[in-house]
Length: 281
Ligand code: ATR
Image (cartoon, rainbow, N blue to C red; front, side):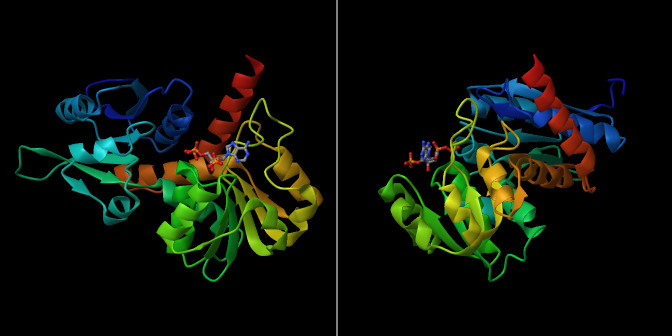
């Protein structure tokens, strides 16, 4: 689509953002939706100046990523109550209310919905039991989403204090890594970087334990089929790869910005092709 005076502006603010998969996914979606829009990566360090600039430039919406998800909250007019509870914003929507000169910036968090929606395709979340490995930023969003959906979440983490702190914040339980074998659950989610290139032989849980779960999900997407997912398939589990979470949270962002249902199949194809292209180059 030709860029012209009507082109709508979207993008991602982060530092660094050079390797983000979001541009390829969002641009494919905008094109398929017939929207005259572009989504560009913007490597910024001064988030306050960046948000002020985007407001003035007439941007419609942007994604916000590391390291700005918390600091950006101080630059906004309104924050969605769920984002407020999580303490992080990953999506901005700029809007000019009819009759008003000022553009308002509203913040949302769609990260927590990514894993939630991906897992909900396989099992009903309410009342299900899910073991989450890891207690970092990704785990926080994943666990929050599961608790919000009414799942019983059990957290395990290499560093006990960090895992226990996340469990306490969410009101769920924590088990030390050496007791994971005692847990039987509907799903297992790896939120750590174990298994990510170049550590492709890494696996966050002993393969012999995978029998204890019906669904196994990994947030690592390079490689797309991690050792965890390969072993899980062998054990007869349903599997969910790391692109699913990325895709679902982005689809919610596009819905916020456009009001329309985004083409998730197109977005997923764009992601897979981009990963293939990167691997080959
Ligand atoms: P992110 O924001 O991507 O979640 P993070 O905040 O650095 O990243 O968290 C990474 C998580 O992966 C942590 O739970 C970390 O465990 P620790 O709390 O013990 O550091 C976990 N992790 C990373 N590498 C790991 C490894 N080799 N084995 C086990 N857990 C690991």
